[in-house]
Length: 220
Image (cartoon, rainbow, N blue to C red):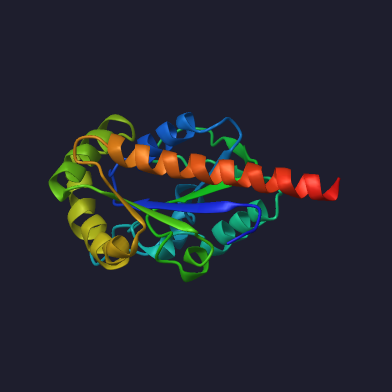
């Protein structure tokens, strides 16, 4: 937690709609008021990833993420300093990773599968938001996304789902569902949950503006 920032953690299972939710959330808030740091950009190199019992790389474990780098960058943002990260490319042959500058903002959104599981990161979060979607819907969405956007064959997606995604979700994410401040159901649409969170963050921003104006008046 920080006196100058309000940290929002957003977690949800694979294909629960986190990316779309974050895009809409950012559109609904004043420009420059929110920064997003995503766990997906902190995957360790493939040679450092753990293999499953069949020798396949399992990217759905907390150890697949460079937690130390993730935490360091989050703390840098909390110190009002910008960070530069390299965008992670999912199975995109020939893709050139982009360098992304993330600037600090009043609202810092920390997004990813394991942001509630890592104690060091969870401790810094002021508001926990959980995207909740039925399993069969998430699987259908993941097959479409990974096939169309990432070039994975459906058989590979289904294997990962059964052997990696579901076991990891049940062990490392689902236990934090009921401890979340806001649960956003996204079986069809996340509009209601988005409205609740947006209203709350507008309130936090207005409260901060009032606090700053009072402080400036006192100093003057």
